[in-house]
Length: 309
Image (cartoon, rainbow, N blue to C red):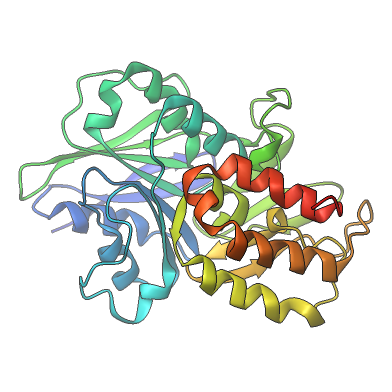
């Protein structure tokens, strides 16, 4: 088996197999192995099928975010990297939901089952979500104008795998609940991304991007793993952090680990104790409501923050 450079694309240089005598997992792995930094991989699972176990088993720097499928990790031999897994199970996955997801999140790769693209209104937001889109299965439609075809292979199982570069510029909004703000084509929070680094330009000082998913997005997409109790336990331990805006929109899930972000934001002066108390109450008292109506639960959370609940 040999390799071939598929060319420089805005500073990225990729490699691919010359022929497709590989499984679907191996084709995806070969592409992901180009990264020398932590990456977030979003996979839209159909039914209970998912490749997340392969991703988190393969590389300690890969964080797998599964949308749909089983609501609990299965016994798939994920082993020591199972802590790199996030599962979200939205009741109805529609174009509006994926559009908001794409506006406030920036995963590196998105694995898309071809059957999801049978709905025309899903095509454009799905191809705006990540830096790269990997379509698994035969699809006869056309990718949107922002998507640049890179390669197509047929796996040993006879499955077509097609990889596109999306040319995503950045984020429109800082977090899910800002969805009413005007569209900017990703120019409000520009992101520079390649296989070695990913930088967010927020204000005058660029910051290194944290691979994962914002805790608010996780909750809005009916996140079920890691468990709410597990997340709450970690937030409780943040009491000693020097942070002036410890709201859930400033927390990232890297698998089962909660990472606070946006330290020392001069625009904020949130009371840390109140922030932690509100987050913990949301995850405990409103646990069922988060799974039934996450928007209503987050409204209750905001009332907690301002002392109205």
